[in-house]
Amino acid sequence: MYIVVAYDVSEDNVRNKVAETLAAYGLQRIQRSVFAGRLPPALVKDLAEKLRRITRGANADVIIIRVDKRALDSAVRIGPALPREGNVHLH
Image 1 (cartoon, rainbow, N blue to C red):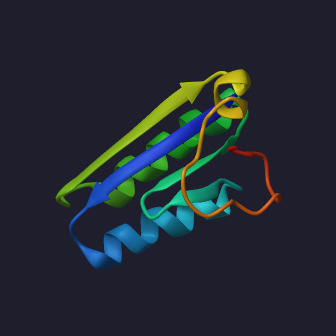
Image 2: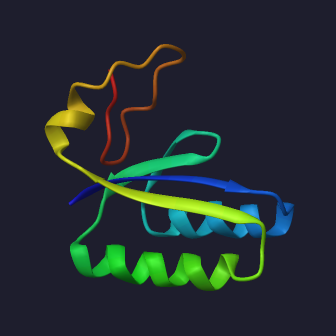
Image 3: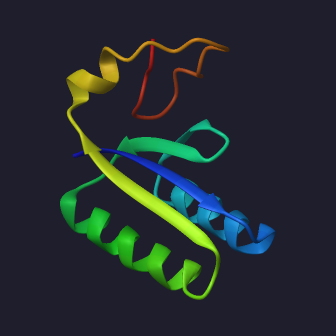
């Protein structure tokens, strides 16, 4: 399953832990506070629980959006091109 994760976290240390966790799960950063990639459904659930623990008590908003691969492939990106590594390639 393909997912996009967007977050808004006020505390630097919590925000850094969120980003490190997303990267550790193999997601690719596509914007400062947005990651995308492919994960099996069980790992999406595991990731959500881990992010809940990391952000508990913090001023944080995290959303995990399941998307169809065709939606990612047809996305239009205005700005610098993303590296062709990883699971997500936006055009």
